[in-house]
Image (cartoon, rainbow, N blue to C red):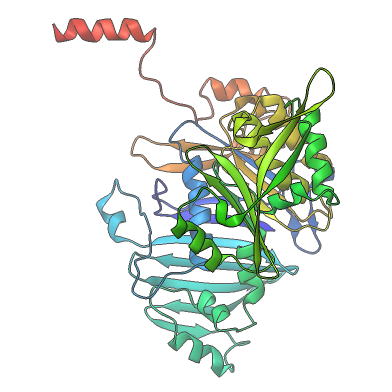
Length: 446
């Protein structure tokens, strides 16, 4: 589970900004808050509101970038694609810093690193115990020091000697088959799951398997949520006959591993396909939907003919089903959760997830949204709601609603937010119709 994340000097975050999933002393919706024995209570959900260009998506991108640096790393002699705060000359020269605190196998760790486009300036790993901290290693100025528990392991120093300047030691150690740090690496790779507005959820192929729980769940949900879709399906298509460039098909043959699936959307028609490799052979299915006419006959539609909202639902439902399962340990970070969705549909997704949360839950959902109608204390606790705000210098910050002193649990938060009392709303510089503004500008020009 994610405990906290901090970012400094990245995109619109000039100064260090910290985001926390640690529950406050608030009692509202307390029965659904996970409890980590001997440590703390962690929130199952966090909503980040804010106006356009306030920093919501930049926060998502910061998490996604840091994860990419850990999981993918950089190629030899490649530039680290860092984007520091650009509205300050000193910040352009300074490194960008990312710090995670999280649980892996019921152990708490802090992992952080500072990077420029050329190199990893600093990197550290600390195990956080119940009453103290134990530093496992710290890398700085081209050197590395190990804590007492790792000091005698000479293989680690050998691994560091082979770590490039533009590469994290953690990433290189795991790539060289060192098992000591593998659980932490797998947390970034498999547990922390960013979902961008235009991304697709991976286990989509299970929609097409009628014996899969996901098949019935998705089809039932699409019907109950008034999308008009009765069920989803797939039509077999010969892989070599896909309407795709030959070089793309060759690349898929090279990269698609055995027992792996790939989702493909081809322009300009926008048809969607699921590709799977089993036993060395690649199979392809074109995704279709079925509607029922007035005579109860099933009518087939290409998935590209469905509305944007229906397609967004199809993309998100597998994630919500996954995190609703008690044994699952995932941290989903969804940018623009409400994109193309009606407020009532978004609310239903959130309420269904939260209804299954309890002390033993180990999954979390973080999302950004513009939808102020979701700013409701009947759904969220005050410490589960955050606002992104950008100041006059272009710097973003994150503020938890629980930090406001006058934020009672019976307060109409939405009203205060829309009135601009909590920040995170657009600072509109004119009033009146656009036509009136245009006429005024025309007179000034004359």
